Length: 629
Image 1 (spheres, rainbow, N blue to C red):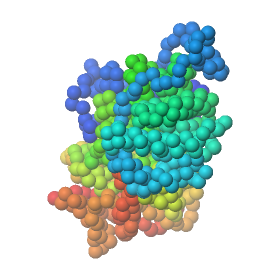
Image 2: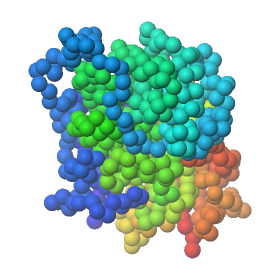
Image 3: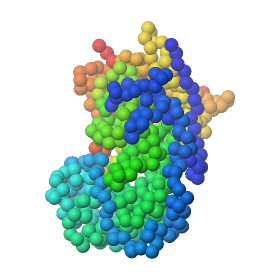
Image 4: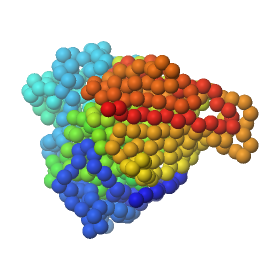
């Protein structure tokens, strides 16, 4: 039986003022974190179980009503409108009554534990971020002296509160939390008029900070009475600042964080009903604009995907603390975000290195999925998010078959089109370098742009040029705008195999060539056949030749040796298995590379490189990766 699906993927301009219908893809496959208790529909397709226990029918297209504010009465609608135009919440809740005392209305049970190692480092006197230590006393909390982006996000987003809470009993860590908070408040006595006045007052960091304060309030409100009053005032002022400035967020994920914090403040601070109604409308609109049709965030980053899930899980905990049900769209979106994330889980249960991300380890992924409450399996064919997943016995293949993200969505956009990663039996064979978002820890900041380049991925480059231009500050320039992708099941010598064929136009304008890649993975997972083709993009091919390189970055534990004729290589894995790599038409070179591990730290590795000159009239290069014995 043969199945064939063919589609063309291209970036789509989004209208930020209009919510979108988002269809839920139900095609799934066996994989890591599988759910044996999962139900099936009448047509035999598996269900996805949402966080609220509701079964989402496979193939159902989410209606626009799933991403509109909850049903409210006329009075509440007027309250929301009045709050949006600036009428204080206290006046709307009790116009003739006494102003409510500033306090926290409920204690939130944190759904996501922090990193115990990082928390222990804080107790020892320093921030530990991606392996790099920074003494607490040397941090400029006012932000006048800029630090690396990872450090700024942790310090000003107060995500370290979760780490500290995970490291020891609350009584032991509360003094440390209060000391850092007091120092931060001294350096930031009042919010600026608008965002951009240093890293402390971006919408993303401010939203993360307020949500962390509210979720981990016992760490900062259970000690000194004066500091408790000061912290509560800071929460209230920060919420009011977000009310006015959330629309000026730096990107969609930052805006989602801002709205989530506004809603949480509306739930947990007095006279919060108007703010909650206002925040829920903005939150649901932001969700509709952040996520694509198959549940992947438009930045195409697994790190951003995890951040979006974590934000919604923490916000849901705030609803539960106040004994309220979150809007239906929040539960629906959590259920929609999880399956695409699992598509990028390898056979070692850690994530692939895509769009600035690194190989986040199994424990962190499992903890997040368990906190989401969603029981599902990975999507194999994530069309708009752009990642194809093939599971063949104990082998997992991941393939980037879409253009890079649009500049307005990308924080660490990478020129990775037609790159792939492959793992077998919990061991990584072919990888991408990854880790651009971790630059500033042990990964030097100067490597950030290089880690986003085409050469940092297991794919083909022409003339040492990126298939899509890499710009500063995470932005993406001109390059790949169109990708054709075809996926089907074929017969392969008496057994079946999955055939992926994709092409992109990133080099068409400069070199008049289209890159097409064919990958064929046998269903027993022991053989991957590949072919890279360069085809003239116009009827009349250009003259001359251009240099090419096809890179295969190897996993960190792979031992490699080249054959005497230069046409092959042997790959030995720690479990004793042996793989053979064979190329046709050009010699194989062995070069140094690096891979960013699950803690965001660089690991020295090697790469196989097929390189030479190719005619502007085109060429093709075949290769084979096969398990021996």
